[in-house]
Length: 528
Image 1 (cartoon, rainbow, N blue to C red):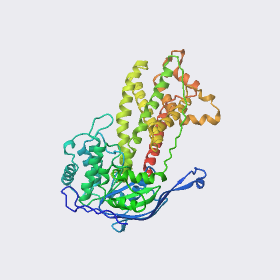
Image 2 (image 1 turned 180 degrees about the vertical axis):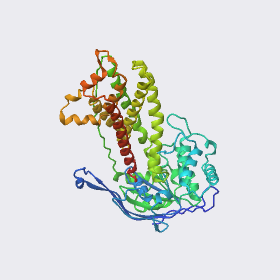
Image 3 (image 1 turned 45 degrees about the horizontal axis):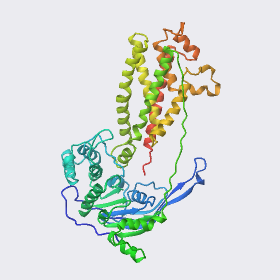
Image 4 (image 1 turned 90 degrees about the vertical axis):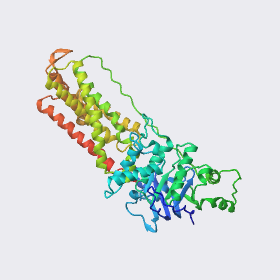
């Protein structure tokens, strides 16, 4: 079936000189496994997401439309080579040739949610994309000129030096933000630009302006393929080609302006004042069902009552405080998951570079500095030994416990997508580690088949090393007994070697947890 006519081929001064590619797809069939378990994976069933799709999309504005759950986003991902090849059959050709292995890096893909750095300006975001995605053979001056031209092409000159904005920082408007996302992909002058529901979250006027921008680019020879749910008529009339999907099946593929004629020929006539897009969905919506599943997570409570004022207990809660304070690090990779996945797939940087930069920025600003400030306040307020050696050992130990707990949080949350779920896992782990730290439960009294769990307790190692600051001081509740003697009663060795042995254990745990976090990011799903 034919697609719509492309626009004029007038050359635009901004990076539009490259003519868009022709994308054809043949016998596309995509299915996923459902219902299997870890122990019996073969018992699961398969569900067809896309069924025998065929067609061609030429330079112009090509729309994929359908009801919720029709498979339009999955189809877009297949065309963009961003779907897991497992379960996928058929062929996608670019200008008559198979997709190159690096097609994900050569094409542009604007995801549904905004994935730009809100703390950077529009110009800085474009410069960032140009620096990482354009070849090194292009000089810095040429990259700067390319950024300037793109800003003018997208109509972002007025806000070029304004921050994009975050939840805490006021930024540019929704339409300008969407155009910034588009510009991040146009910086490489891609042969094909994919957009996943670009009007989501935008008001009618802003959505119309974004589609007018895409139409202008399509008229200058770009191949633009987008998925869209239910556009208004002013947007629908801009489409050159229309693909209608229902339950993964193709019910129409051809020029958008001939779709009404096609439906009329098979017995469905659109009312004179009805929006064609609404009419199409009304016709096909009965065959599409969306099912929502709800999962309930249970959480437990942990209550500790401790009324004795003593330095021994203070050290315990100083250590535990560092563990629970590290819960905030669970957000480090989760909040930027979509941004990282998009930029990693698009070839912005290696996983190791991203991982190292995030770790260093988090440890220096959010772990080291707070640990130093906390130590300065807590140490002298509680009244520990007034010696420089004990103070700096205390500060070092507190920081090391914070590093280890942070590493554990990163290892737990690296493959999670919801912060609340990661926090639940982290809280449960911290609670169990508190039990085996050496204060709440006497370690020698623990049954042998559970005693090994103490070696996995971060608070236990931190608790033992911080005792160095009071082990020569008499405790308030037993004036004739030193902290070192109390430790022996609790089954904790505070000898000189054991002191540094605990530091070594914390370092090893930190390295192990960071390795796990890195491997989770390294082998993250590269396909949507």
